[in-house]
Length: 452
Image (cartoon, rainbow, N blue to C red; front, side):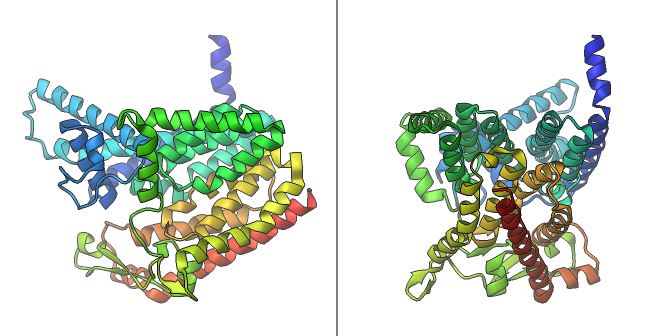
């Protein structure tokens, strides 16, 4: 008992940060559920209803949809988590009925309570990531100060808070598995790392471009094609187990689902991401009339060309992926020259963060939220004294503006409405984001070269 008490006291700095972060997030969630729900949450509600009334597999069909015309286009793990929260909501309803509240009589229980519960997994994942980062940095540096710096940078990053608490998105869920996979790889638990990356992709496909890095790390650590093959087999097995509740032919189901849904439903070169394609094509997010919070948060994406539009006979989407590969080559060369130095947390996290940042900048069909993995990785690098604090803060602020432009179901003053909806202002925020990102990338290449 004394040992446990000593442990808690020894890390009371982290506990204090965690409590403050929880209070802030819960307050934001409580505030957010008082306004309109975003489209994704409305879809999640429809899918968990279908799963309850029919089956989880039926969420991937159009037969029972009540909201929208598209069936479930997400890998199943995120849906399983949402369905679990739906079951909690149902049991709470029974509990309220036990205490004399008739079913259907309380509007808050009928609507906002489920919205609140659907935000809880992202809240838990944020907290889990903070603990993962703190333990990771603290154990490797034996410095509580560095661990607290890393955790604080993540927990109080306004883009992270906005994403999980206000928007209620589940990017934190895929990233907690991804980051745990990074840690397991550094601990040389290759098969656990493979399982974690599979779980990440079972939530969303948005980090799929990191798979070659993990395959290279297995080869670098083991120098064994057999270990690489076993890691791949583990990843496939975990994926198939994740599909079994939906289909008894998990492999064919997954292949078909991946081919139809891996790149998302929107076909624009940039899907609200202020990246290189926004800089080039100058799209515009337009708002509805500023007569109410509801109407002003009605947005449209204009002038973002489709990925199948051709330049010189080549679809823009193919050109974008090719550009991502070309721009990534200097980074890949430096990573390979680092050899085993790449396994140092500072350089691995810097390298992975730059891969994620380049994907955000150049990959087609990127959402505004897909810069998320850059932040925890950079926070770890800063904890290991990487001199990128300024860039981290600036990118966090700029992405928060990007997020708020895309989702703002709250009253806006006329001045704020005019500024945020202005095409030139949006392009300026994009210009700053792209410029800082490229400068950070160049600095990272120099740091990696100096430590090769």
